[in-house]
Image 1: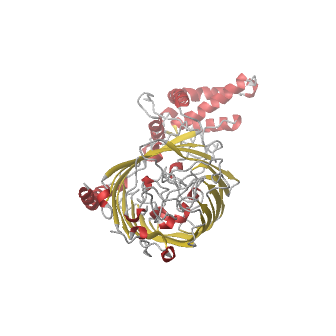
Image 2 (image 1 turned 90 degrees about the vertical axis):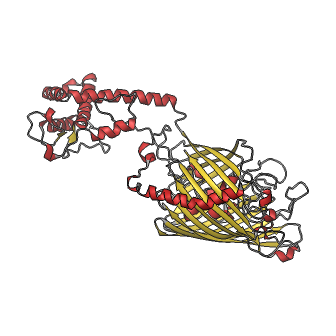
Image 3 (image 1 turned 135 degrees about the vertical axis):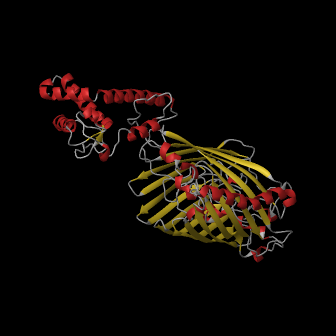
Length: 611
């Protein structure tokens, strides 16, 4: 089965090449359905734009996590549909589009007419146009343009004219009903009567449309889930295997992960994220027992497809430039701090690289949990700072978070924590950030708050072996001081390069060995819209976190070898909501170990559904 998967991965570029040849011919006609058909039921307006995926926002937006990318918009009730309007078989968007095309004719198609009812457009020189303009000026009628102007020098369709006429008729009726009929001139009533006769058909259609839209709006209000909340989701199916190293203990598997996020806004500028997750994506056994090459869908699941809350957080602004972030569950530093990773940042979703390591500098994986953070944007300057505590002790599951409980060494201020400070500069085409993290870790160092490693070798995470049951041995608490730099540069609007590097001084308190010097660095090049809009081709190379001074530990199998990470992937966007990503991850010197074969090769065919 492993050989079959490997062959399929090697053969997939040819298949994708054929698909690209077909799809490229249709690019000129490609349209974004989502841009033309998003009808929001949330009733929330002016929400700060979030990351584009749902699951994955761009750095510096309100939220950096993948499922907080949906922007709620208010329900838009517009005039729509021609005379043959039927609520049973015509969508609101079709009505709007068809209404916008109604009654339009170029000037050279217009012959001489004797009645305004024969006109396709109502022109500024027509008596009806001038009569209505006079009524608008006298009675303060609003004809319906968004800028609340009459636009008296522009031609109008007969249906636009009828909308204005209807507004003036309503205004005159209000004056009469209020007992101020003496303000309405008799000659104006005669003009209104004549206009009403000339545009009787259009007025009838218009009023029918309004009644139908009011009925549809009432139905939506009754059936909507919430006036403040939108649902976003991502489902990943992945066929994957490991072919080298411990291949005898690994098999081809079909893994999955599901994430559902409820994105809520109370003011239109804040955001409350409540996300549920489930999955069955267990890790492969690789040389050295580390997590080099761990994939994004391995992050954030407990195995067995058990549903749990894996992220609860609240974003809110103060003023125009200051954004606060308060996570209650599973907060991460890259939720609020830009990672300067270009197109490689996918926020652990299924729309970017296969691995967690290729997405960003591992310095952002030091700690996580609950706490508070803020980012200040001053032009191109971005200053971020945050404090996250998790109470982890190394007994969690990769990508899940230990509870913050009121017992010794597990609290908000007396347990594991990580404090980050960062200053960055970003123009949109070039960005660079300098990051410092001070942390106290009772579990793994690069654990994203879970207690277990999410990147690098076991030695780089402070673990030096397993017990008889296969569990990681208890480790001493570690004081961490980490220094990192990350940056990206767009060669063109669709080609981006990025690079990062970090040095971490990790002192395991009480082990007698002194401080470990941990290094990590990497870089990649990404080609967006490669072959088709929405596609992404990425090539990445780097060294996952490793101990650079192994000799002082006196462990025979711990070598001063760099765990080199090579990765190539190609995301092929089938539709706006479905993508397929074949890719390969090759690890050289996995685990810094001299025991057995120290290389690993992971092949994956990932399918991602977003909604």
